[in-house]
Length: 162
Image 1 (spheres, rainbow, N blue to C red):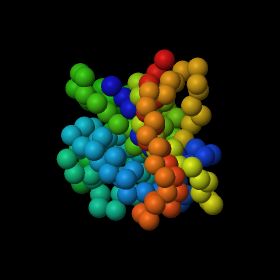
Image 2 (image 1 turned 90 degrees about the horizontal axis):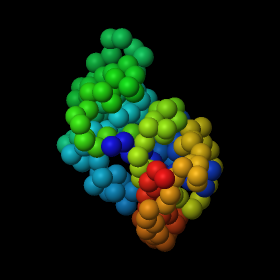
Image 3 (image 1 turned 120 degrees about the horizontal axis):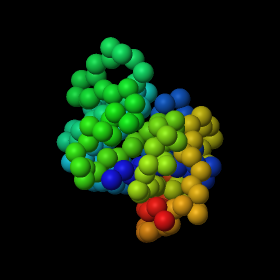
Image 4 (image 1 turned 90 degrees about the vertical axis):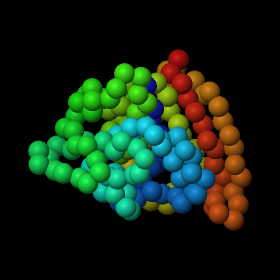
């Protein structure tokens, strides 16, 4: 099972200069709840953006073209195919970014776990791929208003492949 997990703004923007666009504590809690105990697969730059390195209680898999890169707490692979082949049968793998990995993994994914942010980031240089409604069906939507900890409305939206 392969799921893509991301927070996207109205334009599907996901980042700027290798940083998240919005600080949404509930999105971070949901990310932790969904991915804990599972495999997370990311590109090298996404790994480098993690403030404390490898995320605890998850199998951290990093994709890189570098042949000699070693990252504490992470397994390194050179292709998405290699990384997925290393997963056990039935294992849940979450693709956590960046943009090029999302594009590469989208055709293989069974599920999308998105936080859709009802705002546009002032600057963005990384975007989630287009979600084709002919291929993806919304399974659930949990809307949340802006509040003292969340500067804009957002919704947790899960999609499944048709």
